Structure formats: C-alpha cells, structure tokens
Image 1 (cartoon, helix red, strand yellow):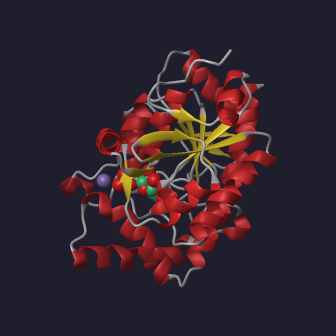
Image 2 (image 1 turned 120 degrees about the horizontal axis):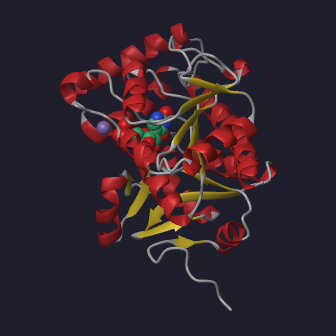
Length: 307
Ligand code: PSU
Ligand code: MN
C-alpha cells in the first residue's frame, strides 16, 4: 500500500516522508542561504556539510526549495548544486511562492517560505543561519522581513544565530514581542547578533539544553499558540567576530547599499555579499561555522521533540 501524499502541492523525498510517518526527527533547512547568502562554491559545500551534521545528530535533513515550480522537501546533490550556481534562481519569500509555482520557476526559499513549506509537510524544526527582521530605517522604509510575519503564524521552531546588525536588533525584538513569538536564547543571557555572541540586548527568555528548548516549543503548541518559536543559538566563542570589529564593516556595507540605491528584497542579499567582500572572506568562515553549530543543536532539538 502506498502512503497518501503529505500535501498535494509538495514533493517530499521517500526518506523524509518515511521519517515523518514514523515520527522520527526531521530538520528542515532553507535555500536562500545557499543561492543568495554565500558565494559559490562555499555555498554548496556548506549545504552538503550541514545535511551531514544533521544526520550525525540523529535527524533526517530536509532542505526545502521550489524547483521547476514544484515545492520540494528534501533535495539531492544535483538540486543543491543547481540552487548554488544557477543564475535564474529567484529569492522566494511566502508571497513569491504562488508566482514561482505557477510560472514553473526555481525558487530558493527564505526563512518565511521555508517555515511555511516545512509546516505543510509536518516538520517542526528548522535550522538556518540568521533571521530576517526589522531593517535599519524601517520607520521610514517600512522594510520589515516577512520572516517576522511567518514566525507569528506558523508553528515551527526556528534555530538561528540571532539577527545580524544589518538589521535593527532592538526593533526586531520589539516586533517579535508584539507578534507574540517566544524568543529563546540557548545558554546565554544576551541575544546574539549572528557574528557575535553579544548584541547589547538581553535574552527575552533563556533555555539551557535542547531538551528545555524542545519543551518550550511543545508547550507553545500544546497551548494552542499557532506561532513559531525563535530559538537563538549563539555562535561558538572560538568562531565569533567581536561586535566592534564587524560593526564598521556593516556600516560600510549599508553606506555602499544606499549609494547604489538598492532597496526592497535585494537589500539583504546585497549586504550579505558585500560583508563577505569587505572582510576578505573571513566573515564567511564564521557564517559557515555558526550554521554548522546550529545544525548540531537543531538536530538535538528535533530528537528531543520526537522523543
Ligand atoms: N540573514 C542572513 N543570511 C541569510 C538571510 C538573512 O544572515 O541568508 C536570508 C534568509 O533567507 C532570510 C532572508 O529569510 O535573507 C530575509 O530576507 P528579507 O530581509 O528580504 O526578508
Ligand atoms: Mn524586505
């Protein structure tokens, strides 16, 4: 007997579908970080490595993207290579999904779109690098990432290294509070700022260990709160770039972006690429290290949630 499809719009690999059916841990992974977050070929190497870290942690990785218009949960090496190198891969947030699907395009899914597709598949845990949030100057540009909207309405635990200071970290935390999203920090009293363990902002809530984090996520959903859980896992101390050191680079990248007149969905990819250039690639090493650490932690959270 063949099992019913998980959702008629999704193509889920047999490995992921079987794990979900048997209640085994699965970790979703996003694809904008591959196509628009890191240069080739480091991006495809990172994508493959993160999958193997999730496996080593006892969970099944499910990288999510839209290929030829078809939302896919679980990708092969060829798919990852395509996302990493194909020039026509669209950055797809939630509102882009219908267009990408109907037009048969390739879409690399943001945190928001990955959360939505993961939830459709029944995946509870998702690992990424950095969340989108409130952009600096949002009080006039109104540029708030749809990642925040999605966290408010989709029940997935999202593991990140916090929020880069290309964004307004304080306002991002305020909006997450307004939207009713639990924001947890693993093992620290300060909210992390991606490259750095510090941000100057206190952790809204602290957990110590994957079991505690999983318990809070489970309680969120048992209480009928249909939102996500933002679970910040600070970059390992040995990999961090001090906030003062990366701060100047970020200011320079923001100034360069303004000079070029870049706005809208192009801002985050531009800034990510510019920071790698301005640091001569050293920020990339930190970025890869923190994603790897997030994957190990996320696998442990998924194992705890499934247990
Ligand atoms: N921040 C990072 N790396 C990333 C992104 C953000 O440090 O790769 C990507 C994620 O896919 C995130 C998206 O969901 O950028 C946010 O884009 P926007 O600000 O346009 O919502
Ligand atoms: Mn935006």
